[in-house]
Length: 179
Length: 304
Ligand code: SF4
Ligand code: SF4
Ligand code: SF4
Ligand code: FES
Image (tube, rainbow over all chains, first blue to last red; front, side, top):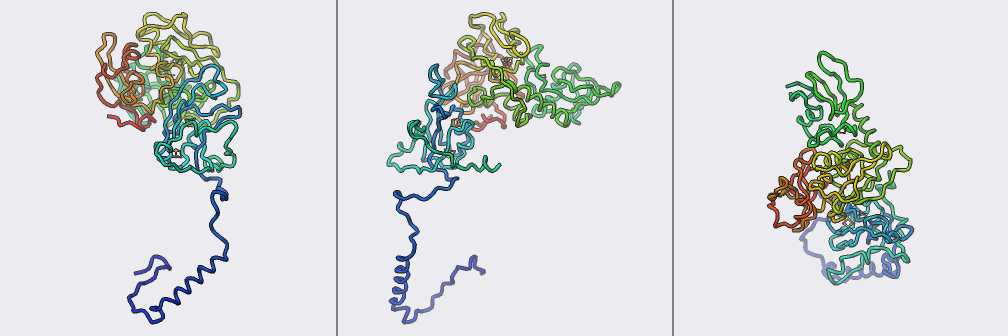
């Protein structure tokens, strides 16, 4: 049979020679390889003290953005939720009251907004669907947790705070930037 | 009976039928779009011009084409008439222009609008509109207004199709609202300050092709595609009692009239059925309501 790759090896049941049965030469050879690697450049890094640069298309933890004045951009239109193939997003809408214009950009806003991070497959379709440029995937990594509940991210953790803005300016959108 | 050919398809219809009706009898999906005509409202039609078609031959005795594109909802068939609908470039081009004109003052606030997902204007723009517009001027703006406790008027979104005015005229006994002003400043208004508490006023919500008149009791409750439309009926002494319930779990978020293939409400329901009986035990649920497969609502819905 023709091998699929040129790296395949045929297995044989031939009896080993004395040198092979001693094993020692093979061990020495292996140790030499190990030793050589001590002096080579390391391929690992000391995460989390050190991080690798992220690709501009990296899709990590979501953020709900505020606009320049600090008002929440999301208007609870539900397009992200219907675009989401994993059905990870749920939300409730509420009407903005007079006097809340500084908090919410539009007449309607999301009173609750939840992403189940255990369902999410980080495909970025929510970001693509959003007509208000409210939700973005960022270069942050989803923290681990010990309970299922801790993976349901509500507005308290998704919406950026005014003092700690999440920079998404380096994000590259294939569907926008390559048109 | 008269014979008429639309896009090469021949059909025999009763004399006095409109071209739009004849086209709908051939196939409701390929019929010209209609924003202002409503078959249950007498006198409606002729306002929006989305239903334009090209009459290439008026009749065998008068084989000349009509000089201009004709609104099919108001043009009656004649024996031997030949009409071009989706086949004619000129018609498609004109429709694109009509959509652009309907949208010049539209705020395009679909993400906020409760009608999104079942809006005729959205569908029209999606199917027949151009992607961009040349319009750069200020759009006219009106404050949102509540017409009574039950109906929300968002005049910005109105396309002045007059359907709601016909409902007020024909279904309700006292006319309480109509179009005020002329031209650019025309606006739907209530003549009296008091709320409309007529028993059939809620039907304006259903006939409004856009999100200008929406259900206040449903305001921002849910996007339409997250609720399940179920056909249901109840015994009602005021109306037919046939309606569609929009459910989320066992909760009735909204009640609306039933619609036919072209999205027109077939039977008008009273305000008691629409607003006051939002409890499942008051209804006989028949099964999932029929929703077009192209509609976003069909995403989470298995139609019967
Ligand atoms: S990234 Fe994909 S899976 Fe995750 S919430 Fe957004 S749409 Fe859903
Ligand atoms: S994040 Fe965007 S798409 Fe999702 S509900 Fe808010 S505005 Fe709509
Ligand atoms: S409010 Fe609705 S039904 Fe009434 S004229 Fe405007 S678009 Fe037509
Ligand atoms: S539907 Fe014919 S003009 Fe509006």
